[in-house]
Image (cartoon, rainbow, N blue to C red; front, side, top):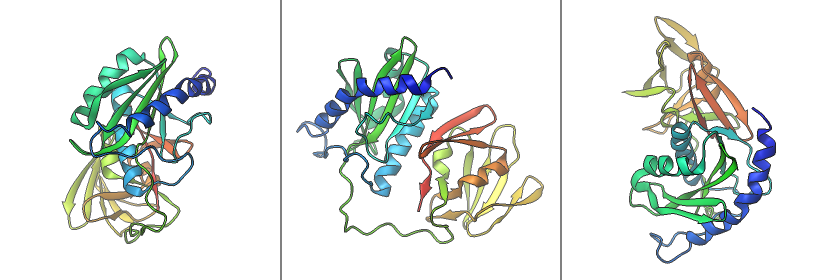
Amino acid sequence: MRQVSKVVRVAGLLLTGGLSSASAQATTPTAPAAPRPAAAPGTAVSAATARAVSSVAVEISGTVRGQIVSCPKTLKVSAAAVCLYVQNTPSSLRPLVRGKLGTRALADWKTSGQASSLLVSGAANGPVAAFVLMAPLSERETLLVVDVAQAPAASGAARPATPAGVVRGQPYVLGRDLVGVVNVTSLGGGRFRLSRTGGETLTVTAGQKGAQLGSGTVELPLVPATDGTNLIFPLAGLRSLGCTFTPAGSNVTVACGSASVGLKPIVF
């Protein structure tokens, strides 16, 4: 891809003003539930907030066919921020993003110079959880940034419990974050079925490395886990389905056949 890093750095300068504008919007009295300003750059954010940003980024990425890139250093974004490079114009992307988010999009796009921003709630009619920034890179290229619009949890707050079987320091993905590339179905009792178009079906059980792939068996690199509802699957285990993943900073692009999606892995 031609000089993507260079044009993304340029977009960082364009989006700096938009970032301040989005933070200001998140503190206006007309915004729902009196949301707080964006987290300070580089600070840790709560697991729930990071998942909200990741969820929004995944939805947007699949809709606009975005590629995850490292966020420009000129942007003062949080550690949870996700940056997407898209080969399309802002004027075409704004209605696509707004329409995909539906009732989670709060109000409409706000414009500051060449940058645009949109506030997003974590659930329909809920408080602000994230915001989306957008700036043109060229006539047919755009940079999108998804970041938190809430302050990080207090330092003394208890961290969520690590699910049984999870290996600390290793990357995992939630089954719901694979929408668009892998279909995940809960079979009950900690068992899940993973399938993708043109590939074999993988059946896994939380806490067990052994899995069924089609009519045969396979051993996963790490055991899957569950929080009682969601599948928590080791990123490396996606290779069993013939999927590949390309790192981009703290994010990855997962590709399964012709389908791909950008996401931020969870590391406990």
